[in-house]
Image (cartoon, rainbow, N blue to C red; front, side):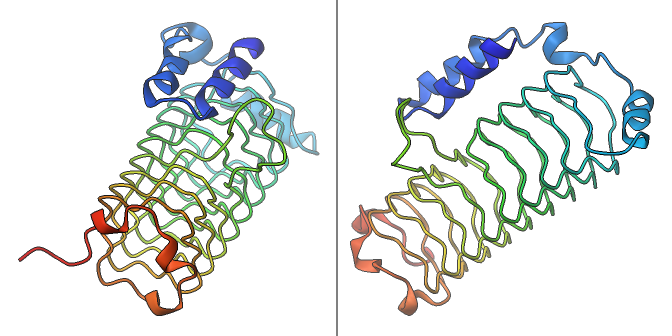
Length: 264
């Protein structure tokens, strides 16, 4: 399972076509017990927490569990499967979530400050109102809900100094980021196509080379935001706040194809 997770994560985050990214899920048996069942109970996890110190749940099958409100700070959940799990209000600050699975999981209001999220798969998951300050969600969040989430200082940009396995980046395709706090977030070369960023705060964020095609930025704050080589084809750039202070505004890609005013 560990080998499958690693290969899946790498396939997902490579800079290939969209259908290649979809093949990542097709390569795993999503109906298997490893992806849909839990090998531990909430009571057993609570007992581990009671012993003190960060708990080690790496590689565990925990799908469908209700882990709401638990203190999992610093926990090791690397390659764990928590598909459709409920973690509302759970504290995962500093946790290792690398290559873990959170398909359709509910992390509303969860605390993930500084969490390690490289290679995470969280399609259609809910992080509404969650705190991901300084987290590094280099993973697949297609269709996820991050409305009202705190993503300040988020590290989701591609590191071009370490790309021996292909371009690794945050995939926020068709993600709800409305009202999210993205102040100072690094989303360089991230995929934000068709995302909903209306009312979000992108003050001083880095969008260098990001894909914003078809995204909705209505009422978004962009003061100090770096748009160099950001693709805005088909994006809705309406009523932007602080546009006069945006960086490299003239260096956007496909700016002539962006929607700059509301249709009447």
